[in-house]
Length: 244
Image 1 (cartoon, rainbow, N blue to C red):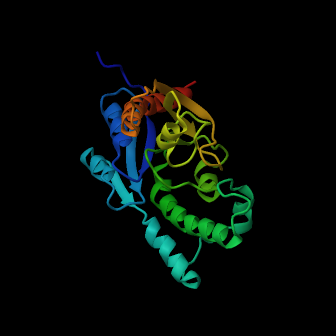
Image 2: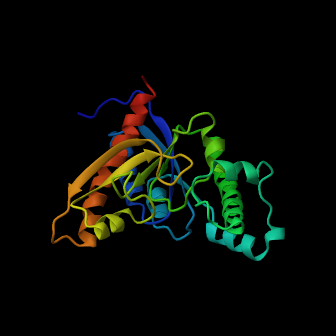
Image 3: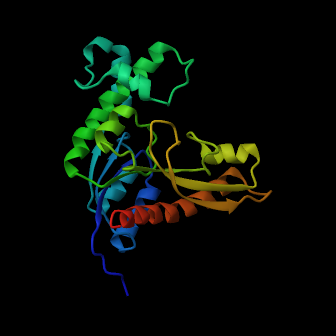
């Protein structure tokens, strides 16, 4: 017998690729396994296959074209306007994404281009008044510009899934880093977003054994199967926390 859903939280998602984690969340919502309703899916990639998954489920979609924004700012910096409320020095003082020895010009370009893109994200999602934003394979780091405006006083409104057992192997290639290091245990982590790269509070983890014969493809397969379980579980944990 299906459980009775008393209150469902409102969630939105951002993706960059195939959207298999998104599909796991959509299926869990449809099957009443989690107390949540997906309101939108956005992407930085117009060709992301996950957008089709969302549309099939009746979820609204949108695209913010990061590559075009980054290119335009690089080629015509004087013709591209940053948001009116963007303060470069303030954001630079908060961000923990770039190393101290990163050239100033590169830092400025990164933060300006992201603020332009993130303002467009906010314009799409802010009126939905969601309880939680899930990054289901979104391959862009969010800067303090976005985080402060979306989360207000609490940073624990943006949830990400990472392909490694944090705090080990942050960054874009968690399973590859796990494999190349020669680890005998791999896994995945769901955590909240903060100003750093994969440094926010951990909400849940799942682990798997790595056999001597395992290839990188084997590790990714094992990890993805656990991701599809872990992400909905953590969303449900979050939903239940709002009722206590």
